[in-house]
Length: 428
Image (cartoon, rainbow, N blue to C red; front, side):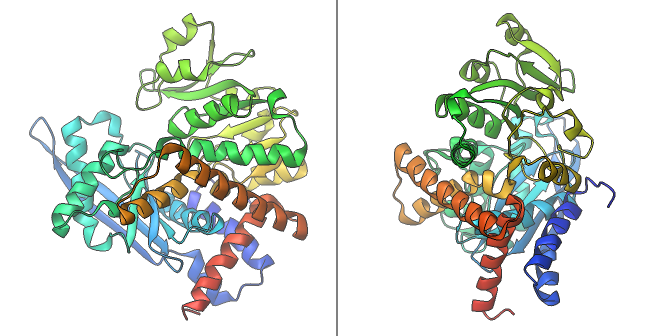
């Protein structure tokens, strides 16, 4: 097979491989290879200069056999129907492997939100909801933030839906601001979920976490809290983080063999994940090229940016010391890279298990919205740890029992759960 970076083709190929191992019937495979519903729509926005610009929005609902569909809204220039399809499919498996009673969806707009003013962003958010609101709802499809979107934008979206519905409906959107229907712990959830998975993997591999090091791709929300948790909770050191420099329009990396001060870096990072290069240099850190995170002599690599970053070519840069790949991003690994990891006995924590912390706390947020009662931060993180630890060991148990790759084991757990729900509902 030639290497491909089409995210949906990768998602389908991963599914096909496990479907064959599970001997799924052909009609079941066909149902799960494709989304149940897809939407593409125009969003006209009057810009601040008085001109009109037409943006294209997407929403894909992959499978809702286990409950309302759930998935983020990504504002990114490379957004296409295929990226949204892939992310929606991965959300189905993510919810199932974490044993959350939700299905998979994803949405987005092809735009760089950093180029928009606050008013333009608000109009685009409200326009997105206006175009799709009849197919959203707490018992239908529940969006959340993703790349290029944030809590404030979710607040605008929830408000727009509530206006159209004629009643306050906080559960239609998660990832909202705390105090506006949001949950404590949502900001930390995905990154800390990565750390809980890494902790359990290290126990399995008999590694002393306090003696380990990591390199992280990205420095957005997920990457920041994965790095913070790795240092503060596991006692390890992070020697490199990469980031997108919006000023230079290039990927860069901040490197320090002695370890980075993550709270310091958070303090010099803007809302889009761009680190202030001059302040990092003044602190004694080295600024290197964007792929430097791959080349570090570390125990753990945490890709926490975009999909298709670990390919048949880029894995050649990885140090022989690396023992764990913790996929904080969605779909960061191609089929060829997976083959490399299998051959070199590198322990991979697959994306839809590793980064399920975000959707887990999103689910908690919806539960709290329904109760109109909100937990404190310790309660949220304790529940998150319990969910993530249980999910990891369920997958590890299947991997060990069936002697299969961790990604295949995660798919087995998730697909079996979804197929069982479809059978119980009489869909098959």
